[in-house]
Length: 292
Image 1 (cartoon, helix red, strand yellow):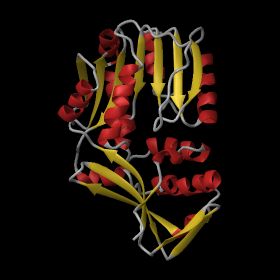
Image 2 (cartoon, one colour; image 1 turned 90 degrees about the horizontal axis):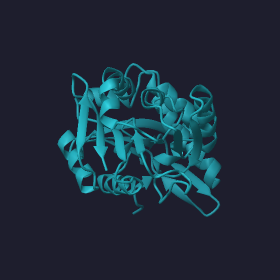
Image 3 (tube, rainbow, N blue to C red; image 1 turned 180 degrees about the horizontal axis):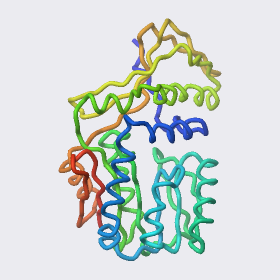
Image 4 (cartoon, rainbow, N blue to C red; image 1 turned 90 degrees about the vertical axis):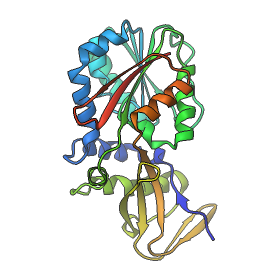
């Protein structure tokens, strides 16, 4: 029996994938972006006071650098470092940010979070603030997320801190709608991963053979995205091939919804100390500031 098929969600983010994800963040069903933004807007002053002086602002998964603009205004860091796997998309976004917030120095670092990575040696270690918004930590299984948090802690000196967004548990119908919107943008985003894999691996996936599917796993408190074969399919690539039965799926993404207490415990185990939490009125989302 063949093992269940999976594709890493890092393959979502080619140029087209980045553009589709930007569309997703503006959809009425997709609450995380606007909820997090509302928290950041409402508590902007309180956050700035809690974080104190920031010399180097580092955004992980920076993408289009839209979310970090508020922190650039309120904290006025000397340097910004945007880190993302989509190098070209990131580079253009960082250039725009540099023009807007000059004389702040801004630079792009292409890195794959699913592998070991490091900041350039000339990035000052003192006064670092890591910013990881959008609940992206939820895309990793808990053990991998715990490892990533520990790695984030290792990037900080004793005066550093992490500002991170997490998506909290909520009704199933809200979650499924957010990952299976009426306009089909999320479906296009999910199928686009096959186009990117074709480009990277030389495979011959036909996007018309696959349908988007969103599920909620209550046991693990996570939304799953899958691609379901609409008919029997044989997919080939230079090193081999694989048969898929009709209805068989490729698991493309998890999005864990951590209870707040669970995630605060993960931060403590990763070596973070004092924490402060801001949430929305419905407790759908949390932004956490954790000192090193």
